[in-house]
Structures are given as structure tokens and as C-alpha cells.
Amino acid sequence: MEKTITVLGTGSVSVKPDETVVSMTLRSLDKNYDKAMAKSAAEQGALTAALGAVGFTADDLKTVHFNVSAEHESVRGKDGTYKNVFKGYACTHSFRLAFDFDSKRLSETLGAIASSVADPDLAIQFTVKDKTAAENALLVDAAKNAREKAEVLAAASGVTLGELVSISYHFEGKNMTSRTQYGMDTLCLAKANRAAAPAVAPEDIDLTDTATFVWTLR
Image 1 (cartoon, rainbow, N blue to C red):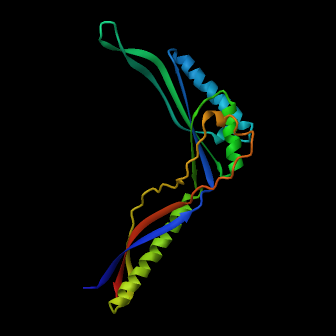
Image 2: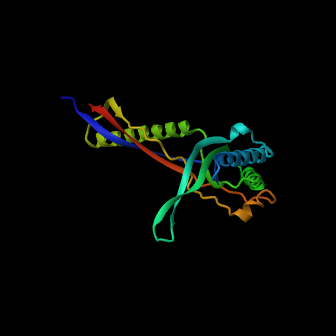
Image 3: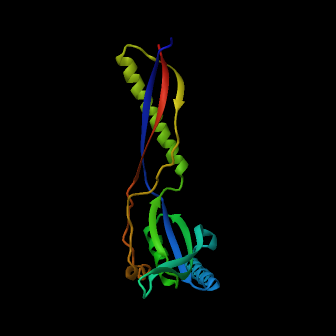
């Protein structure tokens, strides 16, 4: 029976964020369906126009979630019993705006959002544009790590590595978001485009992955 060695290779890379992602969610509520939809559309238009003033196009603002639902609330009556009362039609529209990382660009973008009549919920993240390149670098490092381990083990056992028999790898999507948190309250947000923004250097994104390699032994 042919002798083999099986090694788990671990790849590790550190990636510098080069993309800013601003997530925005608009919410409207009205007992009249048409008015709820009109309000949502008006806020979207205001947001698009404000971002257009700082160089973005309508295509840059990507919809990631849209939902309309009838909302109710439980209200206690005079007799002490509760009943569901219709509150209105709730429209939720979420957007994603991505652009090259730059502190000044981020500041003017937030200022533009604050200047519009829209009042979206905001979340800001720093990530990488070329995720495939980062994943490939991770796998290359895992293969290098596995071979180094295998050669050390083989040499210590008085044998040498033969041919690579198989590679086992299960892909799982990696979270390529920096742990850096960037927040700004409403009052500060309104002034974001009026002053020089402090330089921000998001924390590097540390990635790890594994793959299993099998070699013959000679």
C-alpha cells in the first residue's frame, strides 16, 4: 500500500481596505398607501439629488432591500382588552453606496446626505474591492504553508515527499470588512462637509483559510 502524508495548510493574509461602503435605509409610514409610497419616492429623489451634487450618479445608489408591509400595534381598550389597530403602510428602502476609500470623500458624502430632506439610517464600513484577489492570495499562502509542514514532517521521518495526490478545500465566503467603526451623530453629520475631516486609517482586514493536501512518500 502506497504511503501518504496528509497535511492541513493554513493561509493567512492581511488586506488593506480600499473601499468605503455607506449603507442607508429610508422608512416611511402612512395610513394611505399612495402617500406612503410617494413619501418614500420623494426621499429617494432628494437623496439621489444630494449625492449627485458631490459627483455620484443615480446608478451609484444601489437598492439592496425594498419592502412594503401593513403595520399594526396592540392597543388596550377601556375594557382592559387588547386589539390590533392598523398603524399604516410601512415602506422600507435600503441602499448601498460604494466608492474608493478617502477620508475627505467620505466626509463630503455624509455632508451631502445630511443636507437632503431625507433622513436615512446610516452604517459605514471599510472593505476591499477585489475580493477574488484576496481569496487567491489566501489559498496560495495555505498551499505554501501545507508544503512547508509536509517537508518538515517527511524529513523528520527519514522520507521525502512524492507527488501531490489530492487537495480538499471547502469554500466559505469571507467577511472582508475592517473592524474599524465609524460613527457620527445627527448634529455632527450636518456639519460634515463644512470642515476638514480628520484622516482615518481603517484597520487592516485579517483573513485565514485552510485546505487539506495529500502527498505520496518516497
